[in-house]
Image (cartoon, rainbow, N blue to C red; front, side, top):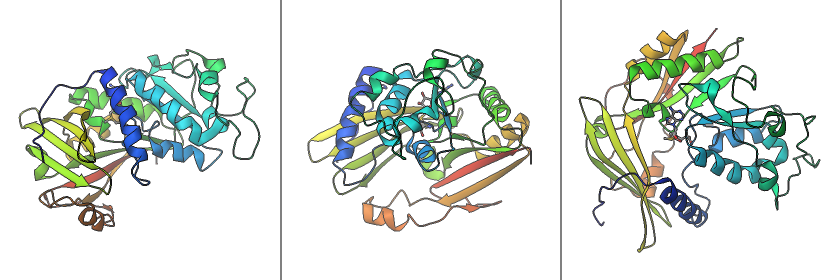
Length: 321
Ligand SMILES: C[S@@+](CC[C@H](N)C(=O)[O-])C[C@H]1O[C@@H](n2cnc3c(N)ncnc32)[C@H](O)[C@@H]1O
């Protein structure tokens, strides 16, 4: 393997190009999904599309600092959920630390649907009139802030793909959790986030996972034990020549589970639960067969878990029960 070099985070333009290349790469991977388009509340990721697609009563709201990622989501997920699904998804551009000021990104509905079949699953044709049922309507709400949109309380808030690690100070983490808490339904709701750790996560690490038509590299370039900050780049290779370096680069603070629990309690969550599993050993050779053999290890709710090479966990904060 060619040694992976450290470069700076790609610019937005480079990232867009990378994403386009990633899309091509993903389509060559016999059903393997490409990486999730980023969104802070998971709404742009496949799980929220799935959430909307599988029940006509469901709605989803997303919030992210990165406008391009949100637009990517609208462009790429719309074809999967149709106009009906689209009317039940709202994406906001803004900061999770000031969510009320975030602005709706949905004005380009007509551009987006051009050339797409906008029939809903039951065959009716979607319209974008203000009478259309759904979470809200982009024309009615165009350019609204989140506070103007007067959204209903949420049942579930997700911050996946280690999004909480984007916040580097305890003060910000608690503030984010307070906003999440106050957005939950007064009947009760949960806030779920993922976090990873293990001895392998606190040092330099280069991992590769080989799949039939591409190889994925996790390049953990540094880990500072004083700030607990780490820098991770993801690279992809298809065939021998096509190497896509730094498709994504993240600067994260690796929060520990007790730190997260304390902050959730401080923000008002009543009970906190941890679901955890061991991950494949990072010393293994990384072929997909070995990796997949480990796939069936289940997450279990745990009070204690001995430190190991690598683990992944979901931390769930429960409100008002
Ligand atoms: C690691 S990605 C996670 C992607 C997403 N959760 C998913 O599953 O697809 C982190 C995302 O958080 C966003 N982000 C970071 N800090 C933020 C903040 N203060 N407010 C809103 N979004 C933020 C970034 O723009 C990026 O899209």
